[in-house]
Image (cartoon, rainbow, N blue to C red; front, side, top):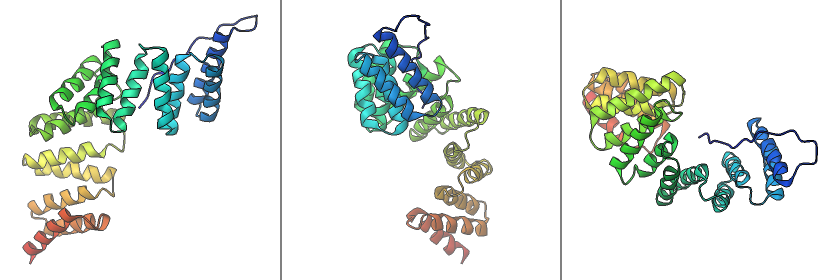
Length: 282
């Protein structure tokens, strides 16, 4: 996920810079380093900015973003904590810390931070999107409301396709096949515009919904696309095997179910489906 960074304009000065300006210069150098892929250089400059000005909240925040990119999640959390301690209304730090907490399984902590982020800045689509995901396990209606709000605020924000995908999943779990199908359609349409080749699950889940609604041809098209994008995704072969069996392509079904088991040998669902298919073929 992309996070906003604070970039400060650099002023030309004739005299030696004061401490605050020096810290800002190092911060900007660190941002430039990170944007260029020089993470070690970025870390050195963020550390220098903090050394010069220990109460410089944007330096802690940016170092936290860097640590997220490096996978140093404990240090990332510590830096967001420090940024918020110094600047209690630091919107981006609350939003990022909430996102980090959710990724680490702390949905309650994530909601507290994301609620605060939205309180500070109630028109940020990404904050609503992240809060919608955090709510999705225990509050499906609240999750749908937040995801819809994100799309209302910014219909084409970077996570718009993922928001529709999440909504499709939630509606599917609630038994709303029609709503789920519409959301998956929108997710795939938006994703096609930016084309992320790894977005196979939207096609896979839509194939499930189409199959349940009796649209076997549409389901087959979607599961074929899933396998095109993710050739080693065993569940797709299992589903395609079932579709082919229903369409009376028993040899094709046999091939797909065998492939599903080849990819994941400990696959009780595919093994059961294969056993039933063999009985039918005999």
